[in-house]
Image (cartoon, rainbow, N blue to C red; front, side, top):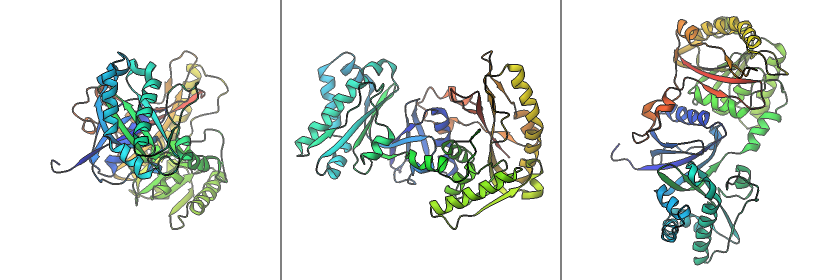
Amino acid sequence: MSLQKFETKVFIPGKNWMLSLAELVAFFEARKIWFETDVFSREFFTVKTQENAETLDIADFGGIIKIGKTSKSFPTDLIKEAFLEKDKESRNRIKQEITSADLIGKMLENASGKYTFGVSVYNAEETLHPVSKIIQRHIGSAIKQQLRLHGVKAGFMGFSRDRQQPQLTHVEVLKKGMVENKAEALVCIGKQQAFLAATTAVHDPFEFQKRDIGKPRQRKIFAMPPRLAKIMVNLSFCTPGKTLLDPFCGVGTILQEALLAKADVVGMDLNPWCVEAARANMEWLKTEYKIGAAEYRILRGDARGLARKIGQEAVDCIVTEPDLGPALRDVPTASYALKIIDKLKPLLFGFLEEANVVLTSGGRLVLVTPYFKTRSGKPVRMFLEETAEGVGFKKVFPFRKESFSGENMSVERLLGVRSLWDVAERHKVGREINVFQK
């Protein structure tokens, strides 16, 4: 590795940063791409990879909002001196760093006519939160000055006063064509280092929205968002050419994301309406995304009889969300939530045995179980590990020490994470995402 050249990329996660980081780690590991996570926080991750490694398409991720390529890094202490201590010399040094960054050169290459650029600040250092907008304006002014010196008339895109953080949304970046024009600067401030990067890709919410509410057949209750389905597909180590099974496929949301990941997919559901709905949605997807050659099968059947339908060691990965219980109008008591769990257990436990039979050796199972909020404030969960291990699975921890740089002292808090969560504030029932391996 010593002869290799490296580059550092910046990743801006969605709201559930830990789920986004787990997806990113799984994506690299599944493709055997060498990487090292240097910085991680709720606001951003920095990941070192080999230069010219496999090109990352942001459409392959469900939990990443922006990707940027770093052009400069400097100590966070310099920013503290400049904006907390109001040291003029430090502010000038920051301007000099920006002047010499590749970012300016890329902007000049793409500037034509009236050039609009933006600066987004992602700040993991709490002491600097009150001055984030000042930092954004200072860096924006420095970039504008440099562009003017090279004869470029540039407009610096501002924000409404009520915006809490000085960050362009992915929609704003898309509409202004800032990816193509290399026109958004990302300022990512960590505890020790700050990074200046140019946005190279941005999440397109309109595509996910199309696959969510644009597909012909839908189910409103407990509908899984396509972004979460994409994350789960990546957690399963699903790569092009593998076969993915969803034995509780519903209307086919997980299957759609797996098909877009160039996998062969198999869906199954006991409900005949769901089987027909999933088929209709898959045909719609193939037409909409021009992937007519993509392979899929949708079967009707009980997940507790998988082996008879699918065969032994017939699929490489299983990604699924079984029944999460009845729709709840109010937050339940703990005792009522436990009753729901007890009713769901026979189906889930029977399915686990069959899942182990149909998975290939080393294959992954990504399984959602319910996470009930309760009136007492203590959540009620379904504990599957002992049963899963009893039928031959082993628990997969989302994070391993090898995925992080040796300099990262805060990684220990991630290594003990056993499962992942997707719990929206407005929902009474959230999702616990479990990953097992045969």
